[in-house]
Image 1 (cartoon, rainbow over the protein chains, first blue to last red):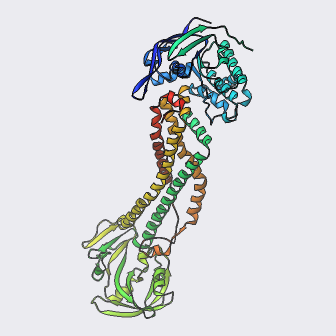
Image 2 (image 1 turned 90 degrees about the vertical axis):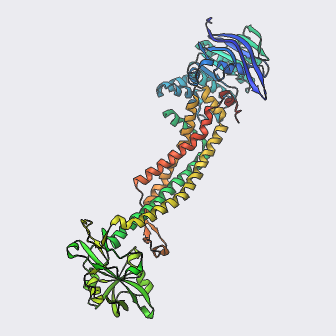
Image 3 (image 1 turned 180 degrees about the vertical axis):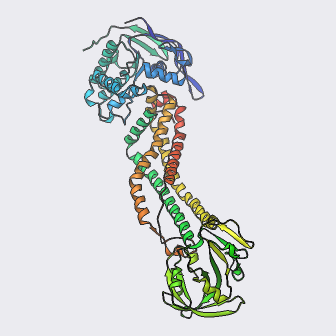
Amino acid sequence: MTTESIISIKDVTKRFPVGGGEFTALHKINLEFETGEFSGLIGPSGSGKTTLLNIMGSLDTPTEGQAIVMGKDISKLTHKQSALLRNMHLGFVFQVYNLLPVYTVFENVEFSLLLQNWSAAERKKMVMESLEWVGLQDIADKKPAKLSGGEGQRVAIARAMVKRPEIVLADEPTANLDAANAHTIIQTMKRLSHELKTTFIFSTHDEKVMGYLDRIISLEDGKVKKEQQVEAKFSLS
Amino acid sequence: MKLAFILAYKNLIGAGLRTWLNVGILSFAFVLIIFYNGILDGWNDQARRDTIDWEIGQGQISFNQYDPFDPFTVMDGHGVLPEKDRKGLVPVLLRQGTIYPEGRMLSVMIKGIDAGQTALKLPTHLLTESDADIPVIIGKRMAKSARLKKGDEVLIRWRDDKGTYDASSVTVEGVFDCNVSAVDQGQVWMSIDKLWEMTGLKDHTTYSIITDGKINKVADGWNYSSREDLLSDLTRMIAMKQKSSSIMYGLLLTIALLAIFDTQVLSIFRRQKEIGTYIALGMTRMRVVWLFTVEGTMYSFLATVVGCVYGIPFFIYMSKAGMGMPEANQEMGIVVAERIFPVYSAGLILSTVALVIISATVVSFLPSRKIAKMNPVDALKGKMQ
């Protein structure tokens, strides 16, 4: 693992208007993430995990402080620059997969590449390679409705990885999966992180996920309660 | 642009029945607009052609005291056109009269015309070929209302140049079939030489029909009316009909567009997570707005394709078979053929396609603008109201 900081969170506070007042989701958070890290944000519901993930994914901006992703202060990015950052450097894996229902597995994975204007031949090669990583090359023509939960999430991983992003942000990626699928998914991500030097940041409650993490950041009431480097319980099978 | 079309196409096809319902109603509106306008254009085309061929020729020169809309001017509304000005003209003299078929009394307009003329389609050659003392020709409507047929004799009464009544029998030498009721209903056509002889109005004409359309100067006391002047009432009437019918198909198009608008609003509400995903994957919000707009616009493209599938055979059939018109229409003084053959011009089709596409684009863009204001986090959670 290198020591280069790929994400830098400096005094980040995020407040949301609620009713007539405000709710503080994050309070003066300071964190650094390095290239190739496999780390997770844990904590109870409402602790600010998803909010922090959204800010790191430039889907949201901090109310105060700075979130610097790939050297860019996301508060200062225009909509277009922010979209470009997500398209070129960030991958997302969502709890409910968020696959586009009318597209096939192949087309779902291909989507990010279409935005990057790759040629059809290059797209096909990259998509099939990505599906191979997650072991789904044989179901490329299926629609998401025909997939099991585990398969759906693996497609989502392939979609996030197909463009070789530097960072993948995964929001509760195993929450809807059984234990066996959860292990498969997290192992797949761990392997890709290792092979492609991709930084993975999770938000999770899942003990199984935590067992694979190199670093665990505990959040509570919008604050970092504990931050620890850990020895992974599970190794790559 | 290409990407938006590909994605929009996939989304539409993937949406299944909802898409085809919208496409169906829009294509129906599209086909109906073209069909109805084709009928009106066909009617216009036919009515103009028939009116030129049977009634007005290339224009008319009329005596200035004659007003075709005032029957009181017929009696004295005639004069002698200087001989030097008569070249290329077919003289017509109008006199009011009465016929007595089967003992009934019917007012008629006696029209004397140069029997050798070829400017109008009236079969005036029958008048020259006849051995009868006073041969006449009448139209089929006149024949029907007076219960006359070819070969019948009927008593006719008229007034001569001094206002004295005179009467004689005339022989129906032919019954012609034309769509212009103005040369048929209540009209009795005879040779102008015979009418001059009967009335003592030698060389008098009420109006003359222009055969070649080139008139340099009109003699004093006479008015020149071009072909377009004489067709202006017909043109105005059809234009008015087009406007009134546009309300009907405007309503139909509005219903189709409302369906698209409604689908777009519902889509944006239902597909928030999808919108959020597009943004998370790196699409700009404006690109998503564009995608949804193209999606809505594509209904009109699909409607055009679907409309062509059943519309083109239908239009081809209609333009060959025509559409039968009720007889009542033909007796209202409007030039309406028994069958109208619709005319589907490229201009009509292209302008209708453009109208449908532009309208669909506008109604698709309006709700899609909301996406530009969406917070992607809320969209991903499906929290937008």
